[in-house]
Image (cartoon, rainbow, N blue to C red):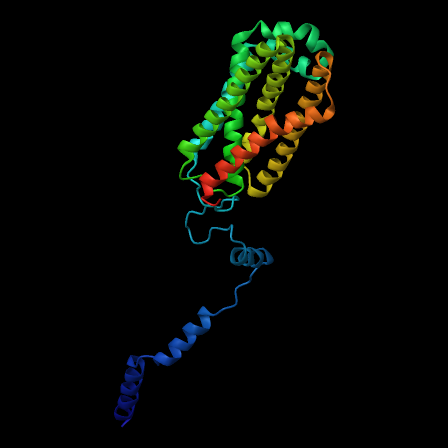
Length: 292
């Protein structure tokens, strides 16, 4: 009896030991173990917040590149860089090679009395640098006129290769014709000394103007439109100032040789200085815009 009663108990104990634990209970235990609270420091919180808000943290592993310059369209005017650089290089070569001529030139410009007596002969004895600076004035003024039309939104891009040499050639022809006419008038009326002094003043101011326009060429070519337009008005002011200065010196010079009224001098300015410039300007505008 005892053996019979113990056998079922042993069998039930063996079967109970072989039964697998419930899977839901095991999952609950695993979930409870995996979601244990992790202690987070303040440093980790701050760095995580910075990684989310600061774009300079490269959290995605991609190569980043930031440019402080705003994107702007390429005007495709590399040729203008070489042209302006060549003009400045020419000026630097002339000044380095003929340093004494440059110093005498500015002394003659700043001291009218001294220029008529001493420096005039010294400058006249250096024909080659004199020719180089006259040529530089023609190049500088021609390029300045092109940049002026470019900044005033005249259609110049399509014909720049023809317009720039044309303007330089036009300036050269105007002053060459003016030189020939003045020399002829001096020979015709027997006032060669007066014409010689007047031509010296005329081309002295032109050389100074050519040098003065050099920094404005850089600004007009490469600066922002607002800065370029402002510098354009400043350059026009300096040009007008030099022209007025030239006429004042010419008037005081001519008064030493001839007796005439101020009205006659004013008529000369209008007929031989102002009117030709206005006519040439009108012709250029008609040619560029097609509007009379």
